[in-house]
Length: 198
Image (cartoon, rainbow, N blue to C red; front, side):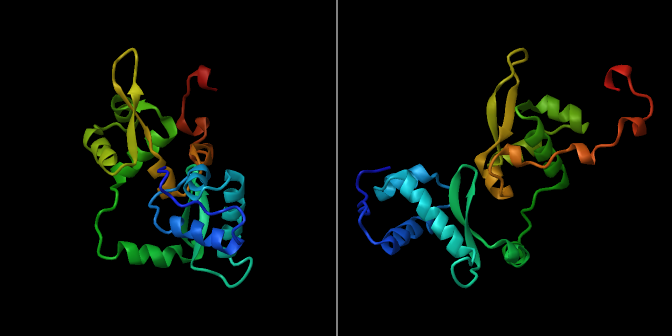
């Protein structure tokens, strides 16, 4: 961050500190770490974390009337989001008239990358049973996946998800992805299975 920011003094009234924090949160377009907020405000990180907690509680209606937005920690940073109870309403408003949704093929490819990353295009194609070159290009262009190195034996590019992917799904980390096991068929239902998989 630049040194040109005017620090909010530690002895400032909490309302002014909260207002300064809100001012920054209103203009960010991606989650911002508490340490970056603290640097911008010229305040200790611990104090900013306390203020973030106070704002989040206030926005959730714990200290007054319910709000149409809340403050969440997602993908390693903080950002203001619309309140979950209005998700359907906001979703309809945002997508009305838009056709830029991900295709079924893109969603399948995104899921494979999310759960198996880092993974190459060839490995994704083997799992899906079709070529995924154009789908991966689409996901790269939308900022949902990124190059995550090279496979040493083959030299193939590897892909993984981005922080934007986590943000769009409202996940703090990949550990928050739902487990796949409950959705997989039992091995017995698949017919004969090699002994090594029993």
